[in-house]
Image (cartoon, rainbow, N blue to C red; front, side, top):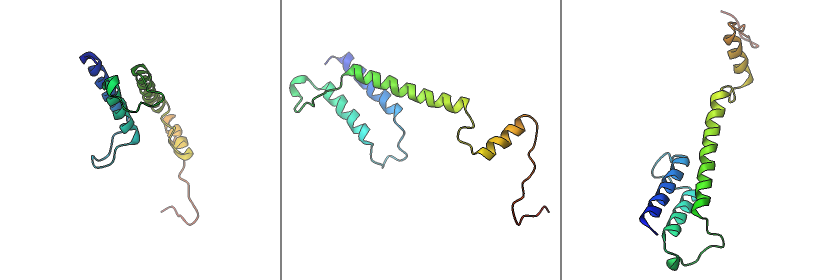
Length: 118
C-alpha cells in the first residue's frame, strides 16, 4: 500500500472518530464500533498476502467513505433539526408559556389545590 493510500486511510479513521460520541473518561472501555474501525484500518493497510482469515465481505475504502458521508449528514441533520425546532424537547406547558411570551402576554398564575396567594 502506498504512502498516499495509508494517509488517506488514516484520514478516514480520524474522521470516523470525530463522528463517534466522545468518551466521558479515558478509563471507560471503547465501543465495539471503535474496535471494528481499528480492525478495518489494520486489515486495509495490511498487504493481501498477510491477511490471515478474511471475512466473507471485506469492506472497501469506498464503502467506508460512503458511511462516513452518511454519518456526517446525520449529524448535520440533527443539528439543523434542533436549530429550527427549538421547542421539540419541551413539555406542552412550557411551549404554551413561551408562545404567549413571544406575542407579549403573560399567562395567569395557576393555583393547585392547597396553595394560597400570599
